[in-house]
Image 1 (tube, rainbow, N blue to C red):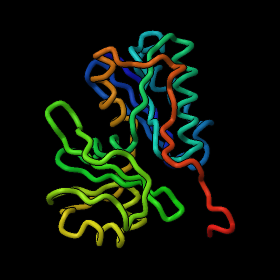
Image 2: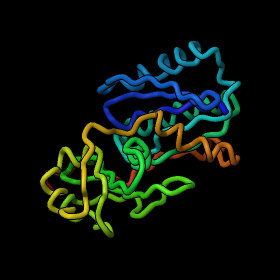
Image 3: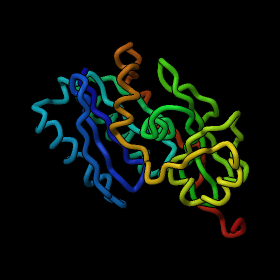
Image 4: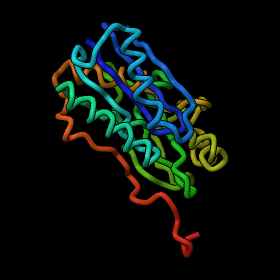
Length: 223
């Protein structure tokens, strides 16, 4: 299969191409330049691989949660490319992509959501992929859902930004924390591949970001 993937949910802009079992990926710290950088990055990767959009089997994107602007960029670019090339698309949860980056086992993912909150989910690796233990949610770090048992791995910017609160919350449950992990297109393309292989890709018109939260800042009276 030949699948293109992109993620702009964080300060980084990342792309990946699954080409007959091999994943090629590129990433750059974009700050707020995602819309400027993403298309040239995609075109260079396709050129280096000798492919055109028409030869792909689908396009996947980081659907969220994450930066509101970044999620809209990823979804919009995916829809535009897919419409033009008549390709199916697939949105992948960025929290599951974090679990994929962490590897195997039981993984608690947490992304900093600002406003003193986190985007949270938990997964366990099974033979047929990641099983959801706690679905994507927005919460205060000190109120994060508790997990059964022990030997959980924590990862994501939430564990960096709210380290003390999450360590206290998961005392005895989390055996290690992996720092520096973030959603990446390479994980998104790996997660999307089985779905595309089963014909589960969507019409581009049905693609949508996964926001979870409906506002990005506190009003003056809420601060």
